[in-house]
Length: 401
Image: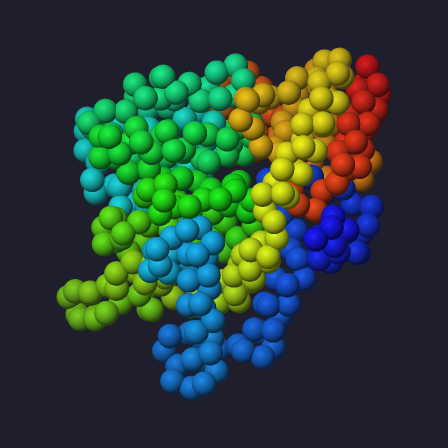
């Protein structure tokens, strides 16, 4: 499939061919297959799931449950029984923090994270530690933005009850060595939570082969709809994840004084499901499975390499995150220019980027920064768009100089 073919799959670029969309770490655009899948469900298959005995409901249920198994295959899980549907990565982290970890923590225990984590993979662990008297241990990064793995390893001990890490930093673009981290964790019998929000679209996850305990991503980061996501739980811990919110649809029996809940994943999915959203997320996965993801990832990374080279020659510009193992996410700071002013200037040039703290305030505080400008590349971005960004930032520098 050519670059033109891929861009042609996304209606937004037909509507606005000049759009240079480089905010993919915040959310991706949606291909026609996703929009059509959701529209078709609402037009031709709309019914509630699981409890209807009529054909329309049965078909909706089959499609919803098929999506669970499709996504399990996509991430290399053993079965759809390991996949719970959530509203996104944030909810998935909170579920494990509250419904799995909180009851296991006591004073003297610890949870290990790192300073570069997104707030969604930092605050939930922080809060359960504060509530239980456990310690939140925060690993640092080196001058390139890579994890200080010697320090990270030294933070893990026999009282570690969870290690949580993003596969890819949403601000720095650093690809973290999750296989090494998993080995360190399992050496002390501690589980690992992987935030795959930035990696799920283009990186192989292979949860079963890598012995990942918990993993989450959001549908809208993989070309699917907002308000969707998954929580993967390994067989080892499936029966140890309790209900998060309670109500209809996730129970086995309800009495006046007690309730018996379904096992995971049913015990997570209280109330009416986001059925169309799940169907749209499955369509996004099917779309990705039809592409050469390795080639497209390499293409996006190659564009980012050239952009970094171009930006590095601009006086006063500092690239934030230059680890040797890095993705197609680029953050930078330009002396004398507030990130929001820079993003506004770039918007006037037809370029969409993100400005601010990117939900990583502990990281930026540690770097002495109030924010950065972030550009992130994916399957539909082009070499020409990368060049346009570099030229626009040069123009920005000259304007403010």
